[in-house]
Each structure stands twice: as C-alpha cells, then as structure tokens.
Amino acid sequence: MIMPANMYPEEAITGTVIHGDASIADRVRLCFGLDPELRQCSIRCHYFHGVAVLCGTVNSFRLRQRAQDAIRKIPGISMILNELVIGNSPCAAMPPANRQPAAS
Image 1 (cartoon, rainbow, N blue to C red):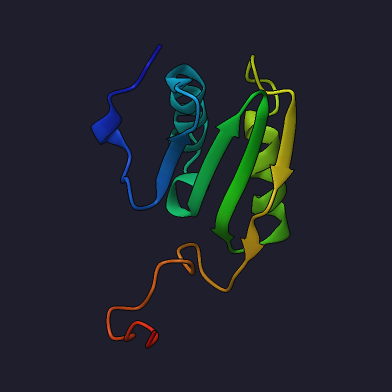
Image 2 (image 1 turned 120 degrees about the vertical axis):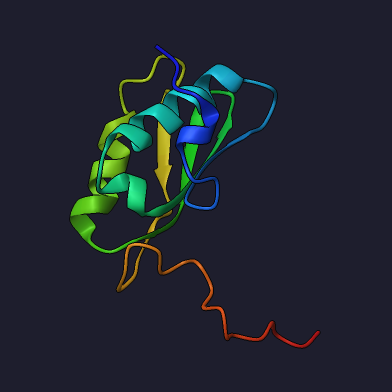
C-alpha cells in the first residue's frame, strides 16, 4: 500500500532518490510517516545501490535507532549508514525563523 505523497510534510520527511529508485524512497517515507514520533523528526534518506544514508536530526538516541530499525527490512536496502544527529527538539535541524544565513 502506497500512501499519498501529500500525507507527509516534505520539510520533515524527504526521500531523496539517487539513481531513480522511487519505490525505495516511497517505502522509507511510508515507514517514517506511519510512526508518530519519527513523523515529527527532520529525517532525510539518500539511497544509492542498496545503501541508505539517514541524515537529519532526532531528539534522542532511541529515535536515532528507531529510524534505522524502521527501514532495516525494506527490500533493496542492504546497508544503512546512520548519520542522524541528536538534537534538543524533534525538528532541531530546521533553522529558526529569525536566524540569518551565514555571510559568504
């Protein structure tokens, strides 16, 4: 069962597809979208030739592990690199509205 893409807030959960495997990204979005806690986190998943890389911010080690465990059994994913950072809020990776971009 594939859920409609508009069910998930894109700024919080994105499946970036590298090499055109949209079905893996859809399954990752589904796993995170169905979990009430992971749905609130800022998690991105990059996928390339069987390797899924989790990036973003979660608010605890438990959620970091939970995100990894959620996608572990997705067919096509043979390795997971968990690059999630533990922050102090579920959406800590999203910049505050009043923060100015760094000068270049």
